[in-house]
Image (cartoon, rainbow, N blue to C red; front, top):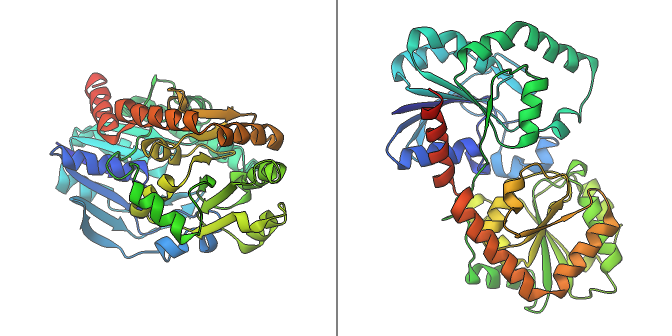
Length: 392
């Protein structure tokens, strides 16, 4: 089949779902094209979080091939609310003749224009969303509410009539799509996956990364990966660490990612012994498995992240908050949930993992088992196509 992805933004170096889905579809024999803008996503504090990895936000327009995927980038005409408007949809569809079009984001210009082009071109149209209420509510305002109200009034009936399958990555996203976007059809729930070949435990990587940081074998390492910004709740993790400095003398924390220096300085002020905190900067997808392997557990205090899948794939148990939306990620007794935002409760959970290495190992093994059985991109891609065929 010819499969077209239409995206506001595409940054393959960060390994988001559309990249891995497209790679998996190519691997099993489909022709895949990605139509997107010539910009990367406007991540918060872009310069201090992802610029080292991605470079400038504005990239060249034109065509290139990567991992067998044809990537077509178009110049942005308008950008607002983390959405882009660009031209070229009709021409790409006319030349590529897609059997299926996947649009990332239901409440987007891309979804509207592809819906309008559908009747004359005969493709099956699917939208997929990962938007969460916590992200939606983070920036409240009259203009934003008005924009979504206008979208529901003017566009929801078109999308409900033209989109064959609406896909969400977790339960909370389903709720948001119904309430904010005006979707009145059933929404298919499909989890995000991980690359089980790229993310697997490596003893060599564990030894190498610990040697780089001068961390001995008897040290218990907690890991965080992602942007180092307040919205991720890293100060909650440091609050928990501060409570454990005396009772857990062999506990260290490693932070993979980057953020504003003033926030990192503020984090260091929350603890007495800053030598047990290690900030290693942003790392490529290819290097992450060695960082997961060097740790004994991971922590993501506030937001859901596909890094949880990556950690599990590397046999690393993790701690998430008890409001976690993606329940499959913790469904095999491979993780611990703490009371969201409560540093004292998080400290208790960390202390328990610190004191029980055998249980950590068992949890890690169960995590790998879970990913292989339910959360590999091979499994997820197959589920996408199965749902597509079922909903034709």
